[in-house]
Image 1: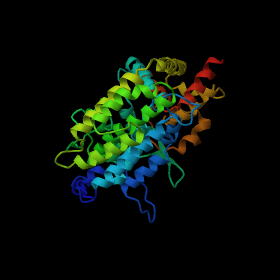
Image 2 (image 1 turned 90 degrees about the horizontal axis):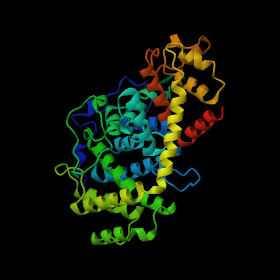
Image 3 (image 1 turned 60 degrees about the vertical axis):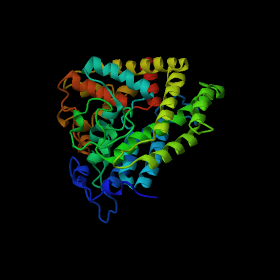
Image 4 (image 1 turned 180 degrees about the vertical axis):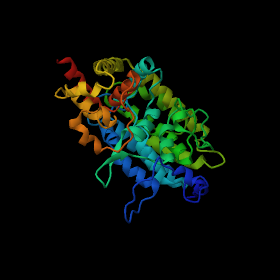
Length: 407
């Protein structure tokens, strides 16, 4: 098979290689390390706490008692599989693709897009800005997730620019069908909304389209399992599929057909793209999923439930702000489940000067950026609360809610 993108893949011979592998600071070196910069990013994400929590975060359907419903972690692995298959066939750098795919959804809140909407409403009110999981994903890998180094101290992940860029650029619609990487290396914190810019690399473009391919079929499969739709509801979609030469609509068929079509039709000249026939089929499946699944009335109680839980947790924690005495006040409530966990989490991100002296030794093991400083303003504290809530799993948020209402 012709590796059509081999000459433009992000490898050492690429003119933008040095920019693509830039980090915030130089990583520690291991003797005889055989990994490339992007392979190091992959393993850092794989061992990150935010990645581990994805297995208990909602993808589309909240169902903590059904082991066969897709979780956020399973979706991430689907995207990794799809994007790696495409990358290998096109001759791109699959190590970069895998790292972006593994990290692309680390910024998701608990309860999926319902939770994201709740947090966005709260951040608009208290911080005058939107919460969006792509932007939060970069915040997670830059500021919040930490790694234990060989010196047994914790530092920020310091991922490469290309991987961080792929995380914040992975979403947004693909209405124009063909994706091309942007030419300029920009400040990622200048990106204010999903889809504002294309990815900086071809590899990032592949992950973006693979994200769409990965969820379309699986969402239909899960909706059938949960009786949100029935097999006969698929008849209109089957007719559409038949007109495109497909006899069935399921996860396997959808992934295979779109992957093969994308590999066949993409080129550096035409971009990462599908045929017009497959674009129409993808649009029809997305329209069906939106109308018959994502807006189904059975999901309305889940939306209200997630709103009640997340707003209750925020209202409970925001009351503890007391300027530079905040952590001292929280320390007095350390025995309480929610405030205690929040206090221990905050220790890692605040300046030593405002910590209770008995916890100074704990702080000394954390050499990460102290993003909350000395908690000078309510807005800084509110950001800390939002960061804490966004990192929760569904189950942890539910437990915190029940602990709050049990007092």
